[in-house]
Image (cartoon, rainbow, N blue to C red; front, side, top):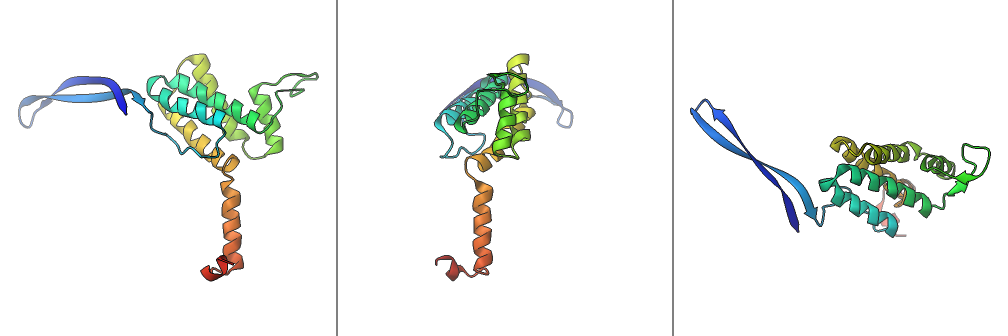
Length: 179
């Protein structure tokens, strides 16, 4: 692993001991390989995982570029779920659908994810168009993405529901689970 960054020295007065002190602060600018900011499912489509891992790397170097990669990941996720790239969307005639329109189409297919995907789209748009990204907004976006992927890719809610059903049916008896 390699880490690069800057070190800044600042002075401050320690009045209790009547002396001047130096304090070093370190600012990370690059980590390779970048640590995963969120869990990456083994079931995440390869094209989506590629952009997510690039977003992890870019987080340390250029937050706006990392935000843009998250937006691209949402586009590739729409591709993975076969959301149309052309259609009527909000207009009267066929055209290339915007990501917003594709998310609306996806909501018809798999309800309950529109807000999360729109949030990621807006963070990505802001990073792309403003050329900057707020660190907190970016970390929130990663967290939102992790929640959405746990449902969309890993089917976590369905798996937990099945476990709950098995526990209910067995009345909590572990010997009945194996049957």
